[in-house]
Image (cartoon, rainbow, N blue to C red; front, side, top):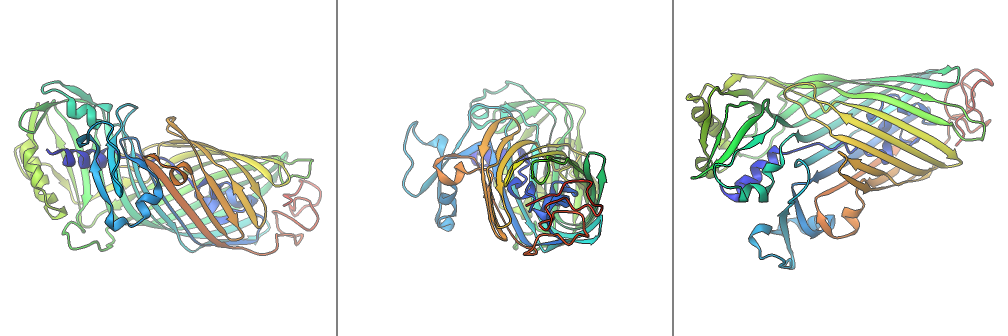
Length: 491
């Protein structure tokens, strides 16, 4: 196996989804229907009878396996078709980067390797207040996610490249998945007063259309060792994987629906009153998000490779793979090597990938006037053998919030490894932000970046007709539909 194939294999196998949540939009009281993506009840404090998202887009990339030396995001976006790359381990130590060339190098220390590529587009979506205590909404969304967790440090490039032959190391259980799908969601929110404030419960039911997907799962600890002749040896393994084959012919990508599914988000929100003229004292939310799965049942295959005895695999034959059209041929060849039969690994013509399910906690404190500080903690958990999986994500978001102008400064910790500072700005109906401002402003060892934006429409006037629960600009009190019981959200 060449160094480039080794790099490609482990970059694909070491993926992990960090839960970048676009918190500059999600935690805002003006987030509206966009806020329901973190908690389907979070738009209870949005001060409008209706809110429309025209388009929201987000891309996010992060890893601690490889990096680009002395680079920033603009270096990748500037003339991308003419980019030239060099392989860091092949260069003399300390050699400078050449003008117009990006150097790919690899981390030598750290925890388990991680990698993420994510894209999301929230299409036309809205909510509307239909009665005193009720809001309904509709969401349309397209998503692609690549995730995986659990691969040990022994697969770091420099560690593996320098590892001697016949030196076994442990490979712990790991998993990964990639999928592309669309969602159409129906959101329902119920709001009511409580003894010490107000509460809201929300649910979003989502119909899923599955396009392309693949997952891989090692279910047991096994020993692996490098062998001479581009070979690997190992103790018995318990490995399974599934994939769609509708775009393996190499004739260009064509979106094709290969399955579907159902999912749900559930959320609860509680706000406390205040006596200092602020919209509320505290806001607490808890939610379960992305509870559901994609079922791929067309152009799909699932394989299981489970052995009872140690095996040795020669990897040199795989170096001649020319493109996606040969993938299934090599899967049959792998089955022959591992199980003695090219068809033995095949299990069934369908498989499932669970969505990146997570528990999310949200907190928000009004500091008076337009000043707020919010926080969110999201913890992902896998729901099945094939699953997209979030990591852990903790963020604090101080912000200045007004009807026409808003600024937020998210400070995030990803999987307890790195602190990142972001920035989100909203002017009227347009928002742009990032969770990693440093990747845009300065050159460094670039290994993570992201961007998001939203274009929305909402009423020019805040709610205040004396009838609907929510924000009121008319009388400065919380409008619960029952006079004098709970103070108003006053913006």
